[in-house]
Length: 116
Ligand code: DGP
Image 1 (cartoon, rainbow, N blue to C red):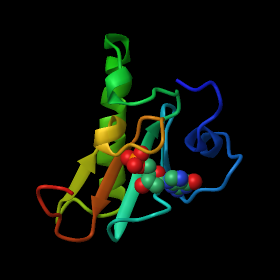
Image 2: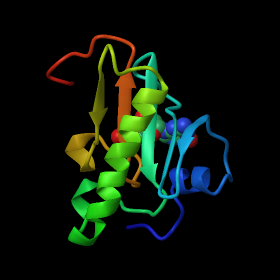
Image 3: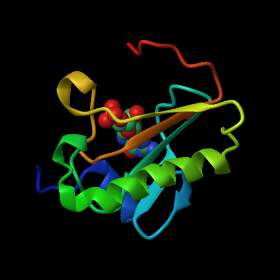
Image 4: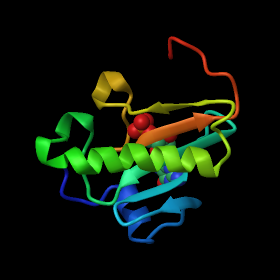
């Protein structure tokens, strides 16, 4: 893992702006700068973990909190009735571009499967 701050750590530290929609002690959620759906929010842990592959058993509680934060974001943004998608890209083939674990919460349109 790179020692330098990722763009998401700079958002956590309020060094760069983001459209924050939700925050609790452990997680932060903000609108994606390149939205792929009418609603596209990223939910991140405040503690840096590179991706799903780098979660350890000791991260069990945090991983659960992240998923629950995604649930809360979807409720807050009124996505529950129509449904939504939660995605975590991991590594090169997964299409991950920021090395800080994040869940994409996508909604506001019919999602396709399989994803590209
Ligand atoms: P991924 O490809 O799964 O690593 O998703 C990273 C997402 O992060 C991508 O959809 C674009 C978004 N993103 C990158 N830089 C910024 C930023 O500075 N601000 C915000 N809000 N989103 C960003």
